[in-house]
Image (cartoon, rainbow, N blue to C red; front, side, top):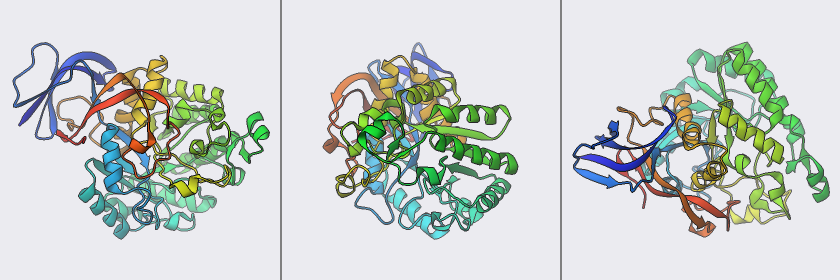
Length: 422
């Protein structure tokens, strides 16, 4: 059956256009996109003039299988993704145990295929146990579906081990995703250093820790030639190093999280642990610099960095509470804050949330073009609502946006042409 999406406002991140039109899909792929008179189809979805865009490709989602299924499962994460317009989840390897063997990765893949209504693209760990002592079997893990390799926030302190892993990844054309942070300076930190941290008496880390970690990684990229992606660039001090690396022709890209684009360190307020993320929220100056870097294309991707935590790990003193926030369902409405503030256009947002992640990982999605997968999200960017964390599909409810007035509601999500929203 063919499906026609008519009367749509098409958000095309590849053409950087935002214009009325229609889209025809069949057999799981987009067949035609156009304006003017629309063709006849077996099924018609009247978009009512609302926005139709490529489904979001979210890099760095933690699904807590195996080990912590009570926090998030593939079933709950998949439903949350569908509710949030995310059609591909790129999962992290920081599970218990870490995804560092082909057997563990195959288990994760089977669970995802059985339970998730959206696509799953798994990452694997870069070193065994994410301990930074011995690299994993990158080739074998690639063979069973790993799209990238990352130890997440477990930063490798042994530069010799890391250089060997980079060299081996380069020989296989594998993508390494790193967390740029100087681990000694950032150990035990709860907030970014400054007057606010001093007034609150909280352990803090300088923004220079991110710059130092990025500088080391870029030096190793220059030495080995590996394909490299920095998962979160959150400070303006790191941006010149990233710009130089790209200008020098290194195969380097970078992302940031929606929380660092829309919140700042003052949102922590009176020790609100739902605002404790890693790296910690930054100053307003850092936030605006990172927004500008996304607008210019210096920062390539935006992700939710979805990190479920249970109530017990968050209902603690701020410095003891676990870091992380859920974001699969709040990524799109939080991004609409940037759109309504006039900081980023819808095509720019979907370039960072859909097109660029797909390109970096070698996935076919992220486009509104003939032959691309019919992975689509229909949303109203202006629909207002008050977020209730208990209405989220995720098992864990640790969102910093609880009770916040937001705009941007998902009206439908399609994966391979099939509707997956409840």
